Length: 368
Image 1 (cartoon, one colour):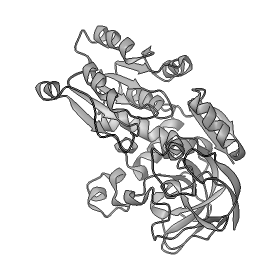
Image 2 (image 1 turned 120 degrees about the vertical axis):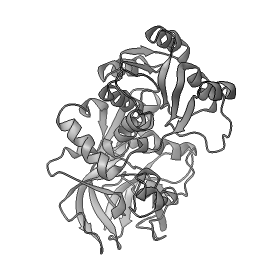
Image 3 (image 1 turned 90 degrees about the vertical axis):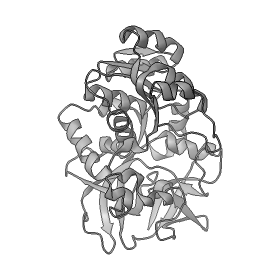
């Protein structure tokens, strides 16, 4: 079949919206008609090269839609089902899945290879095979994805909002609730209030944090953080330090969550300074692949038992957590409508990322 998609042909190029060829689903694959796709910063990393991937590639890894067709050996969804696509497939059988760490499933090794799990491609354009970001490629009206990436949700779910739960909401929420293990009464600092950071703020609020300090240089984003649960805001780490000290009587924060556009090694040292004994620094933002050094006092790490933790997908399990996030949305605990700053047509994908780079969006959304 033919479908319209946004294709990236090289580093630092624009997304090219064009008609592409799409094959039917193979064994254990699903054809989905997308309702919406979030404009996540991780797709910008393809453009900058911070996430290396073979070109050409169809972007997008945060989407939801309706099942159109299923391939052989797919039994957990059927034609007409509403689904959210998880950018992390989970086989359910590897050592990590067996231990409840589905976000670290061994299938993750295929996320930025380009082809599908069997090593072949479903998309073609300009006479060549086209890969899919995180095996998904949600910057396309239709896409074929692994069954292991498909999460069935209730019929009637607002799929435009549910798309955000495929990555940003669950990653941010999980960074605060699961990786940082936020408890009632905690003090949490979140640095970088984009599509991930704003949901770390929400996660800390829902977990019962007493103080939530949101750091971002953009006033619009600081205001949005207050709207969704931040108790205090600051334009920089330097400005946040005295606030944290005053609020905690000098004990400092229980966790500091880094959700900036790109994680820099220099961010870790100041974050360690702002957390208490046994305080946790959570690195959720994607760092430069070649960067191998971080700042910080090893003396303080040992003598105060401070911790540095990575967080992939907020240490979450898509099959369990995506439906739960949507239940929390339905009962008013989790806010999704307020996350969407602006909607775009697929043809406006480059404008959407320009707006993101200029600090105008918490989350842009492509609606099909």
